[in-house]
Image (cartoon, rainbow, N blue to C red; front, side):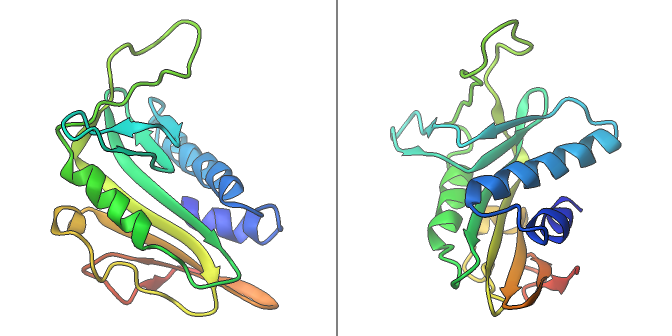
Length: 183
C-alpha cells in the first residue's frame, strides 16, 4: 500500500519534513502501485486551482488523481507530527468538491509541449475522497462527521507519530470508524 510504504520508508528515514515532501513520496508510491498493476494512464495534479462554475467559489485540493479522462480521487494531506491534526477544513473541502460534482472542470494547464489530452478532467461519479495525515500521539477519528455525499467513498489514512518509536499506521472509513492498524 502506498501510504504504508511512505510512512515505513521515507518518514522512518526522516526524509519527510513537510506536507510537500509527504505529497511527493505518497504520490510516487501511489504511481508505482498503479504501474505495477499495468495502469499507466494516470495523471497527478498537485494543488490544482478549482472553481465551481456556478457559485464561482474556489478551492485547491492537495492532489487530484486522474485516469485518461476523469478525476478518480481527491486527496487532502496533513503533516502535523507534533500536534493533533486539524482536519475539519480538509474534510469540508472534500465535501465541497463532491457536492459540486457537475460544476467543476479541471485542466492540466501547466503542461507545455505536445498534449495527450485537450479535454478537461471531469470528476468521476465513483471518485474516492481521501484524507491522509501524519500527526502525534493518539489516533483521531476523522470520519465521524462526513458529509453523506462522500460517506460511501471516503477513506482516511493515519500515521500516528510517537516520540522515540515508529508511527502506528491505520486506515479508516465511516463504516469502519475505529480504524485498522496496518503497521
